[in-house]
Image (tube, rainbow, N blue to C red; front, side, top):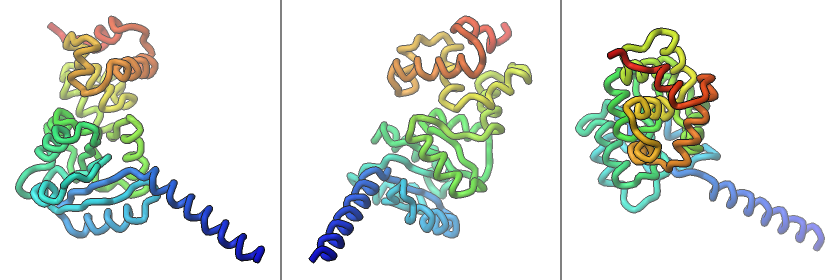
Amino acid sequence: MGKDIETSVTFVLTWMKNAIMMSNKKTLAIIEDRRVILDSLTSFFDLSERFDLMLTADSAEQFIENWADQRIDLLLCDIGLPGKSGIEVAWYVKRRSASTQVVMYTVFDDKDAIFQALCAGASGYLLKNTPLPQMEEQLVEVLNGGSVMSPHVARMVISHFNPYLDKPYTADAERLTPREIEIVSLLQDGFSYKQVAAQANISVDTVKYHIRNIYGKLQINSRTELINKYKRPT
């Protein structure tokens, strides 16, 4: 009798633990046109304790057709898709579900494509040679409010925002996230905190949080210092 009770308690505790883990999982969708890559991603994330892979597609059109009323926390999307591009998908997703985070996934780091993806609302830009465990960590970082981008890509982005930056300033980009780089650019263009929040689709408090991080990383103390540091020549 005692053993039966112990077994029942163990079963209930295991069930509760699994239920909690499932409830904490974030929903994930993937769009990738190369079957071998899609299969690899599917196999990995099917076993993930952090993500619930709910939808995969090999084209934008298939994704749009199959995405009904499911809540998607994060979309990992190839840029170079047949038909509609990944950037078009990012525009579509962010307008239908602003809370869905979009991370672009590609084999190349073209500056214009990166900039267009960020303008479309993407929160990061991952290269396809990123190891899967590392990718999972970076996707979790996005869901926690961060952004993902390699130092090389970050340098390309900040040079797109301001091609006149000297090399020491460009190196600062390695310490800034894509969202922080975007905020620097908007402040440089004279946007108020409220306007930055509206443009970036975040709250004013979140803007202030990012700005405090920017000041700390760049070792400055004011908006004036920030603007002067990245001032474009006239």
